[in-house]
Structures are given as structure tokens and as C-alpha cells.
Length: 106
Image 1 (cartoon, rainbow, N blue to C red):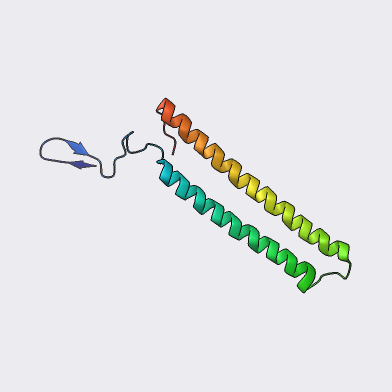
Image 2 (cartoon, rainbow, N blue to C red; image 1 turned 30 degrees about the horizontal axis):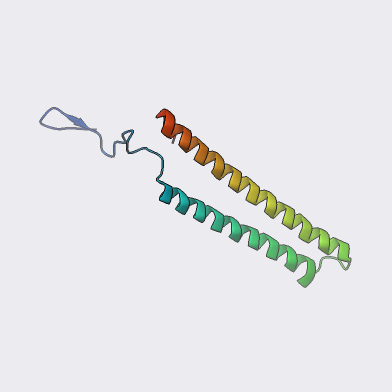
């Protein structure tokens, strides 16, 4: 906080309600794109590791074990994608609600 000769108090980097408004649609789309790319990379690494573990460096000679490893990785990837999409949907819903009520959560 700084006191100026005119008697005004100015707080550096002060955030007003208009500055704390939810992201514009373009920023939200960029954020969603980054989140989806990150999710795709994580899921690709998970699935590649499962295929390597099951078929390239097999932990078992049984074909059912290899298939089970890949299926578990696929289910984990699907669950991860679902969690990411649902959390992004909730975040957008909170932002839309904040825009209509005027309350901004950080």
C-alpha cells in the first residue's frame, strides 16, 4: 500500500470486479485446448507403457495377462479423460454462474 501526496491510497496490482471477470471465450477455448493436449499426452504415455509392458517386454507368456494389462490401461485412460472433461465442465459452469451473479471465485 502506498500513500501519495494527494492523500489517496493506491494498492499495487489491485483487482477490481471488472478485472476479475471470467475469461473471454477465446481464452477459455485456449485453456481447454491445452488441458486436452496435456490429457492426450498423459494417456498416450500410459497406453504406450502398457503395450511395451505387455508385448515388447512381456511380463508373462500368457496372452490373457497381456490383454488384461492393455485393458486396465485403456480403462484408466478413459477414466482420466472423463475426470478432466468433467472438471473443465464444472469450471465453466462456475464461471458462468459467477458472471450472472457477480461473484467471482479465485
